[in-house]
Image (cartoon, rainbow, N blue to C red; front, top):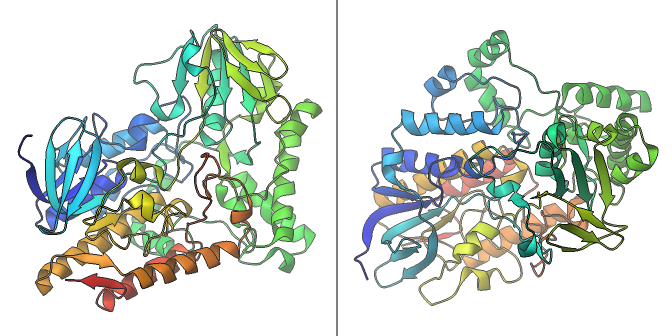
Amino acid sequence: MAKAMHHDVIVVGAGFAGLYGVYRLRNDGWDVLGIESGSDVGGVWYHNRYPGARCDTLSVDYSYSFCEELQQDWNWSERYAPQAEILSYISHVADRFDLRRNFVFDTRVTRTRRNDETGLWAIETDTGRHYTARFVLLATGPLSAPADPGIPGLAEFRGELYRTSTWPHDPVNFAGKRVGVVGTGSSGVQSIPEIARTASHITVFQRTPAFAVPARNRTLTPEELGRFKQRYPEYRRELRANFTGLTMQSTGKSAAECSEAEQRRALDEIFEIGSLGIVSTFTDVLFNEEANAVVAEYVRQSIRERVKDPEAAEKLLPKTYPIGTKRPCLDSGYYEVFNQPNARLVDLRETPIERVTETGIETSAEHIDLDMIVLATGFDALTGAILAIDPVNGTGKRLSEAWRNGPETYLGLASAGFPNLFLISAAGGTSVFGNMVTVAEEAIDWVAEALAWLKQEGLDTLEAKPDAQQEWTRHVAEVGNSSLLPGTNSWYVGANIPGKPRSFSVYLGGFNVYTAKCREVAANGYEGFSAR
């Protein structure tokens, strides 16, 4: 076996979190190495190149805030940036700060194990290279491990087969082809209108309808960008002080505090803006069934108005779960696709897929001939990418064993029994319910300050205490259970992955409350952690 190469810190992942982790820790004087399975920086934006891919967070929010010059120099072209522009931005950041020199690419971490005698983590990779480090940061992303669609016969299909989560880098031509798209979450809602433009026919296989609202995407004018740049620092402080770290539209009132006319007026205004903020129109939408029903019915009515065929519209209406308890979507012409003569909706609740054949998809009712199948079937969220590595601690215990009943972390940053292993944007934090870039920045800054504190105190190990982790996990569950989210079968609770323990493990107390708690823990000498 080749001799392991040693670094102070290893960061796994080269998305927004991994890049900033390398930048911050390198600037703090640590010998840091980033390891990335892709061929370049970008994370999910490197892999998710499907047609129509774009962010559903405002471009001016979904960007780094750590460098004011970077904020001032970069010009976003649209309200919601497309994948290519986001990837270009990430690449620009890597170039600007010369970050690639601290990464190895085309390298997947296959095993991570701690040696308690040396206090080092040993990292094995699929290239045969081995590394050791005292500290490891898993910046693997909460939505980066593709879910297995579990459809029999996929290997038999003789046509073109694609997954939105691992899209080819070369253009895919849909012209004149019969295309089947399986899945109507965000990637399905975004890709279907683009595919339908040129495909001879598109068949959409829908299991659960999505709540989607128009993105109203458009070009950002120089004047608009100028107004943001004039007050970017203040704007960022305002975002960090709210519930999600994102621009939010809200009345600031519960639904019951508004008359029906006021409710309608508020919903109309947010609907015309184009924003997932429609879920935050009233303060209690995610916590009160009556308030949720007001918003849900408003969106359902908008779907009825956009789809000409009443029968198709009825199938597209989400009726089995409250709005916001599955990830809502921003769309750009999604519902209008079903007004086209070359489009068809197959409701899998009525006629489920039985298998893929050599020439198409067999449902319980018919065989549908296809030239191409696109799988828009989502991710093993929050835990999938971390457990694909499945760290092993110094006593031989696997993280997957520690999490056998669901993920348990302290502040979403560490797991008891796994010292010096830090989790970024993981379960137990605000992660997917916050601005993912800001969530990453806050987590990386917290870890960087913790490592600096250890060095200052002459210590080299930080580990979450079991009782602190237990109390935090209980608190996360308690806050989550006060909402409507745990009752819905969604990827938020792991329901899309067969055999995955059901667990709602995103902190819903608010990004502002969460970051204040993290700062309080640090100010109190890393209360809840064992330092040695």
